[in-house]
Length: 156
Image (cartoon, rainbow, N blue to C red; front, side):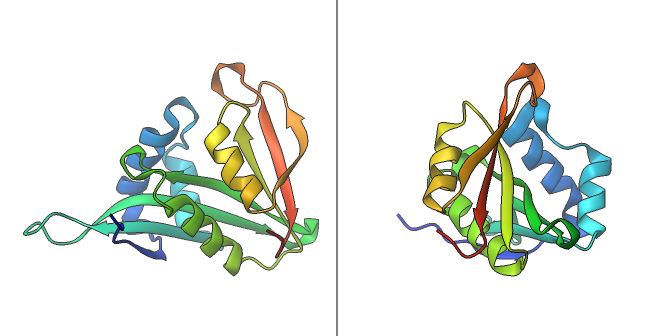
């Protein structure tokens, strides 16, 4: 069954929903209130994926979020966070959010960091053309390494 969703700019008014999503997706690695507030008001790419709520409830449910952090002086942009609610994973939302963020970034290279054990995310990033360029040992909570992946903008 196809998923009905829209990708829209995320705003400060999304803070509570983004905070809840970050904690649902990343648990101990979730960004805190200050970090989320900062990206929701900063000059970065910030997008959300929303689905319609159940009939009669109105509105939309935030089920995905991505931040692209341009760093022109360094020649690259970071995909700083990307998460899809577990109930909506494996339905194309992560790929759609990543593609939408990449489309708004203009730096010649794109980077991201992912847990070494997150095989599903690594497979998605590799499909988009990202390759591991270095490993940051003990980067994540619990001491797990983070893979730093990079691609030339427009590849993949």
